[in-house]
Image (tube, rainbow over all chains, first blue to last red; front, side, top):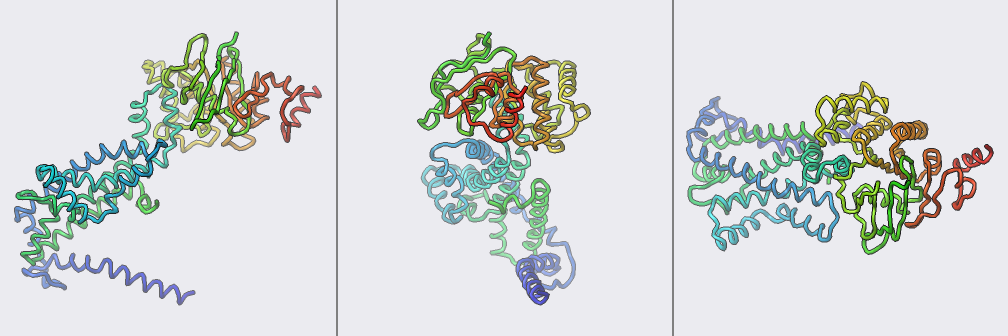
Length: 262
Length: 243
């Protein structure tokens, strides 16, 4: 038994080493003072962190990314919240099919979805790049919004809603004063998860960006194509911290187990 | 004087009639229970009266006013749910005050009425607790207070005691009866528990497959039962008949 546990411990150690090792190396390499990434670093310097703020395309694309993620999130929430509510609350014909359609953007490979969006949204319907980017991001966020809110609603006793109706509140009033406050943490978690999904997205964005409009991860790719200095490592560290903070907030709100159970 | 009347009510679900040509009348201020096995139509009847379901045919009137097409939130009926259905995000006080605030009752009256109602259900001092901090019996009393504080024209119970343990069930039904008598409010009570229905009601309607098989005072049903009598209920009947 003891022997077996030691084997398992070793196995787990290597799994973590494999998963986290590259991240640790990147983190160390970001402090390299020289102009090429090295591990272990030859000294300690924060100049590549400073460099992030000096490259103008990082600044503009960061703002674009944040705006697209926020506005796209709002669009996805406006569509996703009523959809999640209807799918959880009512029994109707075609419910399973609708469920499948709403979840499908996660199942279709991003490259395929991105290319299709390029073909229809940009080429066929000629929608301006910025709007197209917003539509694309709203589409990839929608499944996460619906899934997380529906999961939150599955713990909600709809008799509570009936209680509100019987006490004299109308349907709309009931939704805002009784349903919403009880799924609030679910909604916040859904928004954060969707935000991360959108902010980190490359495969859709790469098709939907055009002249002068680019997202942050796309700019990172372009930068790496031409430069191999530790700037990119510095950005990675900041993004990791950013993501960790968001995940921490989600964990605090409702526990990550929320997303692993079906 | 009959106060609540259901006339020729029909309710169907998926082309199947749950209630058909259903008639019922209840006297003002009395407590009637609907008793029967699951699927007998008792809950459907109650939800129809509450307004959660709409009748396909027929008429439902209360105090001479036709309620058939009145939406649930305009009915002013108190409903007590099997799962209590308290608002999890509100304190006991706010749960009870919910209906009054919707009615735009002024603040001092809300306070007075909520406190009086919490007094009636013996929940003084629990104002700031949240539903999850209460026991089952306490939650049910909050639910009753919340339904009563709006001074409803009709009080409806849907299996209110089935989630409680046996001892508490007996205490709670005594309490429900006491409050109902004290306020003289017309009440419809749904349960599948014979003992519970017979001990609490002025009249019992025994339902099966969407029809009322027997509707009478408990003592009359004890003497001339049309149903199979069993278990604890049998002992209760013996006790009644010996008296």
